[in-house]
Image (cartoon, rainbow, N blue to C red; front, side, top):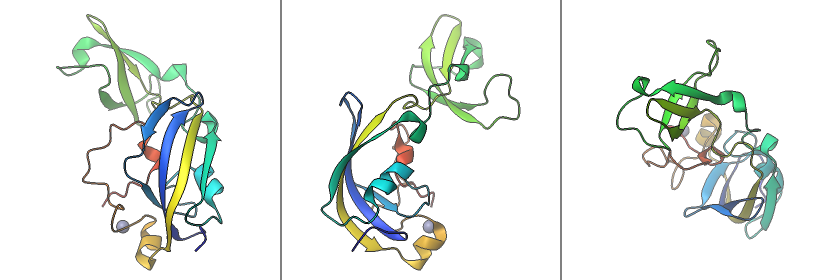
Length: 179
Ligand SMILES: [Zn+2]
């Protein structure tokens, strides 16, 4: 069966940067609903459209097609006392960009801690990076009516809501149903 709108695709993947440094070795395959449901990056869907199980390819996705260019304006310095204890580099907090009261909340990552100041970076951890995906299609099936109505995959590998993998950099390219 060919990958087309409203098929469920199981694909093994590896993610590296443009220098081939491994970022994530997909331990479990990504399973997503194909057809513009924003379950994965559009460039991945484009590369797999019309393909069948067994197809493999490597694609490079530029920052503008992945997690955006790095935006220095999203880096802010907070007073240490405004943040919880214990505090470690790598911890993440939800917040709004400086001077932008109406802005959407962003996830800020602690990138540096000094005695009384903390640097928070609102860029996605993979922002500004060209990403290289090695993809290997393992399975293609028709989506159920319910999956199509919900816009995501159900069943084996489809529900990730009870897995604590939110710390994975770049998890937005995988299907993460919320129920
Ligand atoms: Zn659902």
